Image (cartoon, rainbow, N blue to C red; front, side):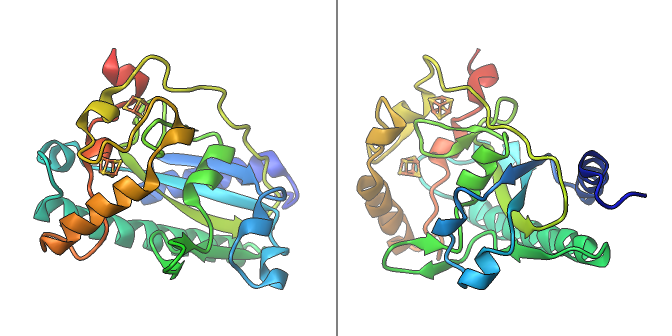
Length: 229
Ligand code: SF4
Ligand code: SF4
C-alpha cells in the first residue's frame, strides 16, 4: 500500500477506530491553531494534523440526572476517560507502527489549573474535524448525538485527508438554557457565562457527590436538532 495515500490512510485509520468502539472520527488540519497548544514548541510544530475521536455517552446514565451530577454519572465519566485514553493510546501506537509520528493527548487533564487549560481543546479540534459545532451550552454539538458524547485527540504527521468544519448551528433550540441551574447558557455561545457555570460546578463538588468539576445537566438536555424535533 502507498503510505502517502491520504484517502486510503484515512479510511484504514477510521476503520481501526470504529472497531475499537469509537462512534465519531474526523481529521482536523491544526496548522492554524497549534500555536495555542500547551506543548513544547518542537513537539507542537511537528504535527500538522489531529485525529478527533468521539464516544457516545450512555442515555440511561444521562437520563438518571435530575438537578445535580449523580454517582452513576461520575463513575461513567471516569470509565469514559479510561476508554478515550486507551483508545487514543492504541490509535497513536498503530500510527507509530506504520512509521509515522503520533501523540495521544489526555482526554481530561488540566496542566494549568489557574487558567483551567489543558494541552489543547478537544472541542476546538473536533469542531475543525467536522464532528460538530459550538452550541449555546459551549459544548460541541453533533448532528446525530447532540452533546451526548466525549472527545479525545491524537496529533499526527501521518498523511491524512482533513475534514471540513460543519456549517451548522443550534437554530431555534433552547433546551439546554432552560435546564441550566447556573443560568449560564444565553442566547449566543459568545455570551455563555463561564464563571457562573464554574461556580455551580464548584458547589456540586463541595457537596461531595464527585471529586471532579462535572455537572451533566446541559449534556443530558442536548440531543441536537434531531432530538428536539
Ligand atoms: S455544566 Fe451545568 S452549570 Fe454549566 S452550563 Fe451546563 S448545566 Fe449549566
Ligand atoms: S440543547 Fe439545543 S440550544 Fe442547547 S446546545 Fe444543544 S442544540 Fe444547542
